Amino acid sequence: MSKKVLVTGVGGASGMYTAKILKESGYYVVGTDSNGFAAGSILCDEFCVVSKASNREDFVKDIKRLLERFSIDVVLPNVDEELIIFAEEGLKSIISTPTTINICLNKYLFYKELKDYVKMPKTILANHKFDGLDCKSIAKPTFGRGSRGIYIFPDYHSSTFYENSYYIFGNESYIVQEYIEGKELTIDVLIGKENRIFVAPRYRIGTYGGVSQVGQTAAHSKAIKISYEICQRMQFSGPINIQVIEEEKTKELYLLEINPRLSGGIGITYANGANIPDMAIKEYFGEFYSLPELKEDIIFRYFVEGRSENKNRDGWRV
Image (tube, rainbow, N blue to C red; front, side):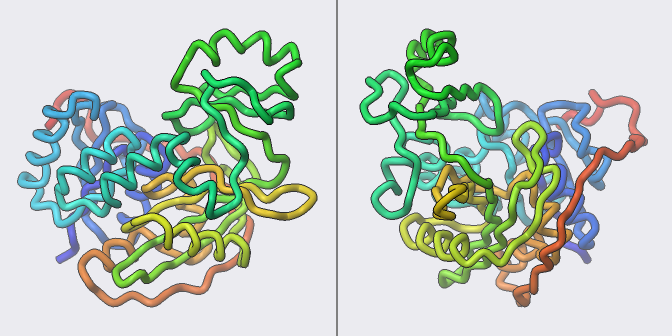
């Protein structure tokens, strides 16, 4: 009998593609989202609407009900706001420690944690003075994902900076970073027991809303090396994705951020030979799996229309 997996956030790219991959791999997939019209719902065997993570008490109650109702074997969380809840509550989830989650979700804490060990763009809190950042810079929310709320300006003398500085510097939840010109890479990583690590780097050739739309897996030795260095410094468990940028001239890698969950572009890595969601579940249960050989093909993703059997989305609430 196939294992039953609860996949959260199937309205977003990471949850949607995780559900799709696991369904194709023979698992019974129960998907959740706070939106009854989550597109990934049609990829699941069952779909239920749950409370938002901001309402922690109700969210935990909803998840516990689903674990019991469907006899769920394991959970793969995919929503940033849910991660700390799963890390603290357990709930049969494959997740890193609460300390690690909190560091990764706070971009400034993350910078302070790793800046002495790997190359990172110089970063300051937005309510600090601009020491040493008289250069092209990027302002982004301290807590946030994707491309939302991003401002880029040539330097702090530019009109772009002055047009947006009141908002950025009046908002303590922003950081300002040195802007690195170059190619972006996402590194899909699985951290298993006894420090067993699998690394799958890929270039982000084209993005839409901060998620890879076109990507190419690459046997990138520097990306693999930096992944091992990071995993030696922080306590990760299960799937994560590391965001780096390859500087245009020097080809040096700069660490940007780490999402302690499956990536929105996990489908690209899957298409090129690595089924990381399946590997993560096998690792969790102590089952054997072999490390795959990755192809280096360019993978394109596109929208596909689908039809739902269920017309009453409110009836799908937990």
